[in-house]
Length: 228
Image: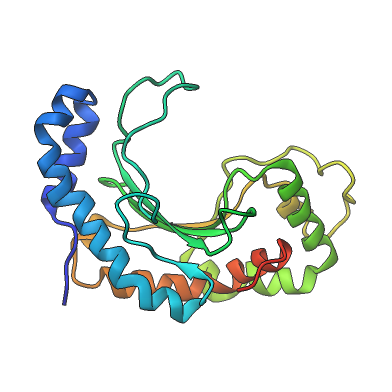
């Protein structure tokens, strides 16, 4: 069975976190390519049939530019943090229409001690956020099946990082799932141990996780008028 990441992958990322500067990265860029970027691209390529099995409308694109892999370079123009690099590597398994319209996605995150996999809609624009909330209000039973499935909740947790203190404007406070409507993000995720990330079962683990997350992503696609 195939392995992708190694202890050297995490060693590089820990070093980058300690020495987040252009000179250090330039000196160690070959390690980034060998231990992080290229293994991640191989993983994305191998995941392609697993993604197609979940949905023919989602993509795992192992391109160096414009594909699933995010750049490790930070855009610090509007941030107080001016460090030039992200001390992690992430990839997005995206909907085929995501460049035209808002869409949910799957996400894989590589970081020492903080790797995870998840899916959903992160930081949606107000119109998109309201559209999802309205769909939940109009379709509560299917939301219950998608977001409260026992298999999903056994493995994944909901993102609670940004939640309103009261019901969003225009939505009834006595709605059965009003606490869900208070969420600004619609995300489920779970951590992945370093041993999983460096082990031989990583692809199989991720493929199973995509299947578990699929009904939730399917619901979000329906909310945003997208095929799944």
